Image (cartoon, rainbow, N blue to C red; front, top):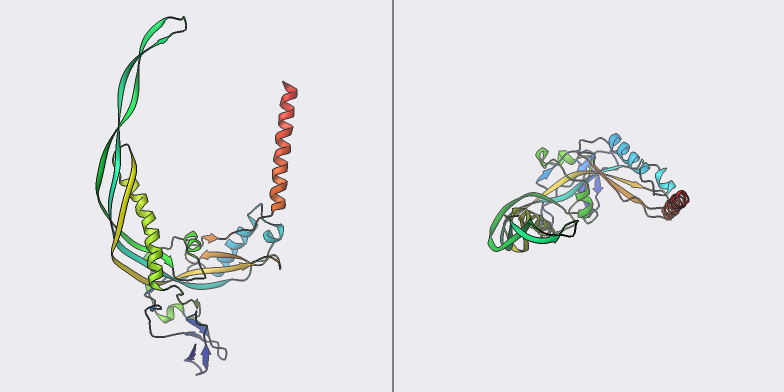
Length: 300
């Protein structure tokens, strides 16, 4: 996709999945101002970077050195390639209305009399208390407002990875404007809103289930069943700041991607495992255990 540079008039080529770029002739940042479409609406909000690249690099370097069972080449890998990306996400809000049924248990104690034999062989009568549960059926309705639930709109950043660097402080959200993302990489959404709604519903359902379990009265409950409908659903396309750091440690191994929350500095990555180190650690533990067992046998 092309747009005209506002500084020198050159035609700037942008990748289809990006909204920002730099003019190759004058270096000025450019932001694509395209008409919105149902699958690619314009962003409503954006959250600025507050973590500088130096801090993100420091956090990433410490993280790379930490995993004891990672290959040594990974722990000594250079971490200097860093990119700040405005990742497209959707803020999902809705009213969730659930109908539920469950069995509620109320505990009570009873005193029982029983006979037993004491240490001298005599039959004696004693009492003890025992806890029992009375069960009753319960059904009803539960409503909760799901507010500002974040889901990814990027196929390049799976939702579980985005969740791993959450939360973002959404109180700092600003209305989107081209100047806010100028000079940064800003990705276009690659998931359609309908796909993100389905993802948000699945995640909201898991949270509603946990909330209903905590909502149940009594001392215990079982056989909780519920169905949920969502009303007043709303999606707002929001750009969130993420530092992306690819770590290359072996030409024959895939790159390990680190993500750093551009607002809080929280990091996520999946370190590779050196199975040689794992095997050595297991053998060492077996040897220590065997030595301790032999020493114990000799003492006894």
